[in-house]
Length: 137
Ligand SMILES: [Zn+2]
Ligand SMILES: [Zn+2]
Image (cartoon, rainbow, N blue to C red; front, side, top):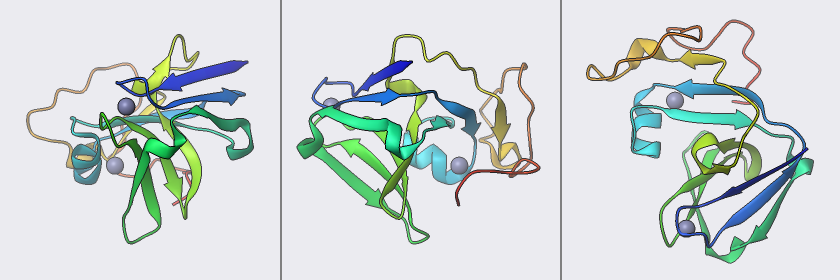
């Protein structure tokens, strides 16, 4: 399958020749800042299945000191991808266009969620990392 994604202003577009995997929402204090929201919502991708269609020159990035980074549109501020040591490993679900054919499978770092957040039922919640975590961190 082919999944498309784009930022708020439409400058940056990408496609994924494959599937989204392991969708999750992280409620830690860093994700709140990075995503300007109550939590992040993202899924893992295979880097070789991912390609930019337009706007790559308008991307900017921010890397924290453990090698984990984010790519975002410098015009509108949408966060599009997560990186590890500069390599794309995930996409934000908010920037996926159309049906991503995946649902959030878990809520992580619920132990540090904001006091004002109400997490909906429907997916398992973990205080921190889930058991058998597969995320590259
Ligand atoms: Zn944009
Ligand atoms: Zn987080």
